[in-house]
Amino acid sequence: MFNVEKNMIVELSADDFDALLKGSAPANTRLVCDSVIAPPEVLEMLAGIAAEIGARFSPSAWMIVEAGEIVGLCSVIRAPENGEIHIGYGIAPSRERRGCATRAIGQLLEWARKDPRVTRLSAETGVENIASQRVLERNGFIRIGERIDPEDGPVICWQISADKPALA
Image 1: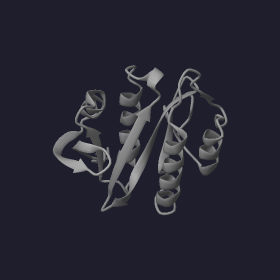
Image 2: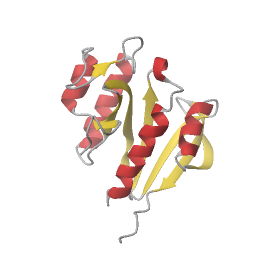
Image 3: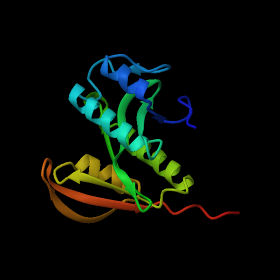
């Protein structure tokens, strides 16, 4: 599994979500001191999605950790279908524009390429969210279209194959 010292993405457990919801950091990490990683209602929603998806597919959520500090979250946000996992991610406002999301999504892609259950990753970004679009582009995601989300409005749809590395 992932090592906090070496990797940015660390699997989130139900206990970790409970700690975050209580305003505490899970073991061996600390919270960002100058902003929240997500509002309580978003944490509750993500914990529910992680529990639902985690019953059939695990891991389903990760902390994005840099130098021991939880700077964001990443998760599978829809039940996997035909090998495709749909991801979402967010970074604490005070830690944005530092490359954290780009590095974390890169590590998530590395994990996906090693997992035989995963053949493709997809994501969506708001049409105005240029920073998130760059995160996906830098990691090789391809823009495949747009749609109108009932909650988020116009979004851009992205996808990348999780082709497995060739065996030596």
